[in-house]
Amino acid sequence: VDECSNEGTVACGDHAKCENVDGGFNCSCKEGYQPSTGKLQFKPNDGTSCQENPETKCELYKDCVTEHVNKTLAEISRLKTPLEMLQEINRNTLGPLLPVDVISYVEALSYSSLHTMQYSAPDNEALRNTTINVLVNTVSNFLQKDKIAIWEALPVDNQRQSLTKLLHTAEQATLLMSQNFKKTTQLDANASDIALKVFAFDSHHMKHIHPHVYTEGDYIKISPKKKEESQPNGTVAVVFLRYSNIGSLLSSPKNHSSKDGSEQRHTVSSSVIAVAISSNPPTLYELEKITFTLKYAKTADKDIKCAFWNYSADTMNGNWATEGCELMHSNSTHISCKCNHLTHFAVLMSSGGSVGVTNYNILTRITQLGIIISLICLSMCIFTFWFFSEIQSTRTTIHKNLCCSLFLAELIFLIGINMNNNKLVCSITAGLLHYFLLAAFAWMCIEGIHLYLIVVGVIYNKGFLHKNFYVFGYVSPAVVVGISAALGYKYYGTTE
Image (cartoon, rainbow, N blue to C red; front, side, top):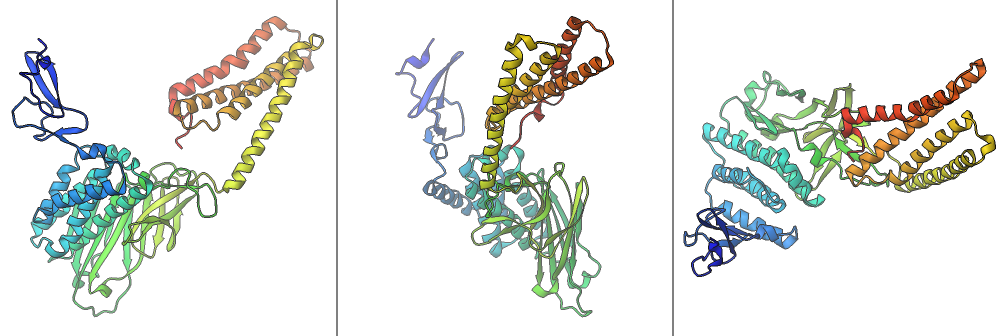
């Protein structure tokens, strides 16, 4: 029975639709609307209504983002303590998010962790530890692998500002809470995508405590300036943070141009680590240097450098810089660096070379012109070897197949080298290039074998040998490409 067709008995309400099921019907909200009770399916008159979901229509325009941020802040500010605020943000960021949600909840996290905590930081040690753990888990929610695509959907400027604010909030909020420890403390808090370690101690223990962290192949240590024997009474808090997944988001955008016009992209090739120090009085614990050893996230086969995230606390705009940092040692798996200041550190790997845009375009045109001239000459050779019967021989047959292989390889290169927007097309282009270049080398090898047979005067069956030439020239490259594609098809093409 189609109960949904009877409008007199079925009244799902505004912006709702009826769906027939076995033994009755259910109501659900239309696209762009959400149920007021959270039930995806409901019955008429059970108190559920369909309300417009502003997030589905909220594009990343300034007015809409501002409205959404203000609404989120208003909801969070109704809660009394920083812990309650953090727990609410933690619950709301566990599941899928929209891009505008990311911006809004980062703002809410900053408000609850920095603004509120300045006036009501927890004094109870157990409560303080719980708050730090909830903070770490909340920050981790934003950086989980399934959230990366959400971050990438943001415009670059919004993405960088929100990421910088997230890093700044995690560091400064932990420092604010760490200043209230009454005794020497070491605290660890770990989540899936972030690890935190806090050292808190007083001036009497400064000589005996050397803050350092070793985690998942990364090592970091701070060295304070040497002080006189007599020190004023005071407290010191040192915070270490390690982010495992944020590097891809802080890498330079694709097609990034540097100030000198060079097409160069910097990729973060390690975890991102952060160190922050707070002492009271401020001169009690001053940094001399920080040394760290980071494990490469991927094989470092290009120019590598030690870098830090340089940002303004006012605008939250940041970029990678290298001032004050130097490379001490590197091998195939790790890099050791030394810096004379504190912030967020990582290993950068340059990709894309340093050829200026103008020079790059000139080189591209020269390459294209050279290939076109080569194609014209190869086509003339193929025509000559194919249609002039008086010069037909085993030698010209080999030349003809060599020219055909080179012609197709260069033609595919000319047409397909810039087709990297579609991964499938890019992979097919790479596979065809691999095949025809191997075929060209195979026919060059056949040329050498044929010359050897002529020089030594070996009498052979031309028909039998021709068949084997074709098998070696075209089938053997296909076998190599087939095995390569079967074992590592993902390596055909490019990740850029």
